[in-house]
Image 1 (tube, rainbow, N blue to C red):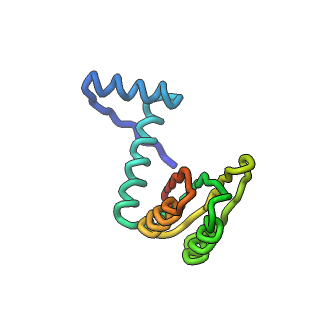
Image 2 (cartoon, rainbow, N blue to C red):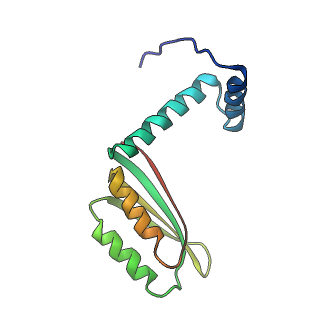
Length: 132
């Protein structure tokens, strides 16, 4: 892929914030940070436009909560067309981590994530989406 060089003019305070971002996220240079920010914005626009995306939903929950496993499995079967795979990890005697790999329209992934996160006993849930 060809790379095109171009100049960017920034106010001094915005340039300082860009440099802080470069340092914080350990980008090798400003160009890589700008690429990251542009791609992040493009992905977020796709979410808003209900485009096809891929994602992962990570859930932390107490598997001792009554009917939690049944509800999780039931919802995943209801949305089987969006789910590529899931992985279940036992963190300790009470807590489990489940990673669900998803692909589909962003709106549907967001809806499924909201439904899964709202199940009683789910302690934490985070959905990450990207372009396909």
